[in-house]
Length: 408
Image (cartoon, rainbow, N blue to C red):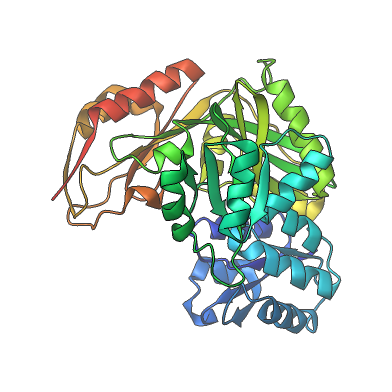
């Protein structure tokens, strides 16, 4: 088995996929930006070949790189695990005759209006939505659905670029932020769904879900990425197999997999549950961000990178999740923009909660702060686990109430 992996160096956990493929006995080549000379010794050991390209998101460049590798040996799989690489990889895969995620599936997993149209037709409950290329089309949707609505990029990941619009007074600024009105520009417009937000991640093999994990946001992402005072949490539950409320989420995930034609892949699905019931939000045909697999590994005493490699390279699973722990991450925001000046409360947490702590990241004093909207891991963060889901929530609350990140 020969697997070609897209961009093994960035972000940093990309190398874990390469290491895992090599560990299960797969021959690994890689395509990436930059010179092969910049690969570290460990990556060089894992790779049989590195093909440099100017831009891994350029479909033509990707196909040329794949063709170059194919002239050396047969390519059995071409894999991408970063959202921005998915479409280029799918185009190259299809043109080169390599099995895997198709262009149609990749498109449906990236274009939000098309995704929701396909899923609604397949019986999956979704928020009302449309694509809009003009103010008139946005206003026509609002006339039909009412406020509030969400405007977002058609191919954005998570809450990136998303804007909640409550009334007519907020609409012009929202449209301007998304450059609506420029030639060729189109955005997604969606009904705002009130309720709790979570996500459901899977590994599939030949269209069947073989591993599944449910997680929760506290608070919902749009609010978390806009308010500095919030220390947002991502929490994965160990109750997914024992609480009946997750059965509907599991069934929805399987239906989404079927409708979108997902074969052997990681997936990341967002959902809401509230007064209007369970609603599907969106999907990425790739692993979740913010190193969520690290939480799943700690919670379930397994190695998902290796498990992904087993499914991709050997066509079979090798592990089962223990469901022993819940695990979570809390983001700790600096009290202002500037540079990190210091921390308080760190030693108190380490002394009190050391057995439950997985790891943490506290940028050194003098490090420039990152804006709130940069995400959960942009500044300081702590990850922890606990055998009780409710116990973990209390533990993360204590961390957020105790540790302070000071900036100047």
